[in-house]
Amino acid sequence: MTNKILSKHIGKVALGSGLIGASIYVIMIKVTLAHIEAVSGQVPFDMRPFGYSAAEAATLLKALGAEGRAYYLSHQIALDTLYPAMLALTLIATICWLGQRIPNKKLAHVGIAFSVGCAVFDYAENLGVAAMILSWPEIADPIVYATSIATMLKSALTTLAVLLTILVVVSWTRQDRLTRPFAHR
Image (cartoon, rainbow, N blue to C red):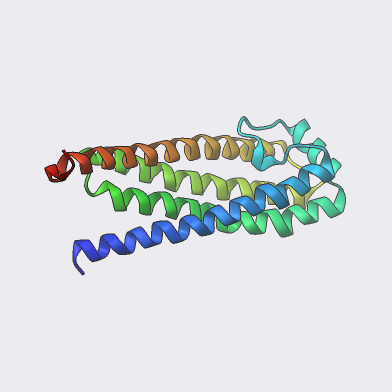
């Protein structure tokens, strides 16, 4: 397979996974997370980039009630099982697709590492939230703290991964302009 054909396939993966990931994200924001917030009157764990305490976790879980906790597991966690992989795949494929033609390969490597990291910590967050829900009302403080840390790391790494992907796109755009023939001038 030639580099041009491989590049075309990577571009299709970036676009396809991006569309799937964006669709899942919209469903989570507009439906599942909105429902969790409406039922509980509290911000869901997934939407707390600065983490939460054991008392805040208990307040949310209590406010959700049995049906709300079941909904969190069956709807939000189910969707959030697909989303981290789609986001990471989108970012990595975009970085690989456009990053092959930029001079700063380190930028691409760091972006890929952050993309993998944001998915790993999103899955850790999901496991922690599931553990808290399943152990309710006996949630252990170490599980809350570990889950909160996973939430904060997911949030930070996602932000950094997206920013680095944008930097790769900008670098590719500039590099592409520099290497194009003088047809536009």
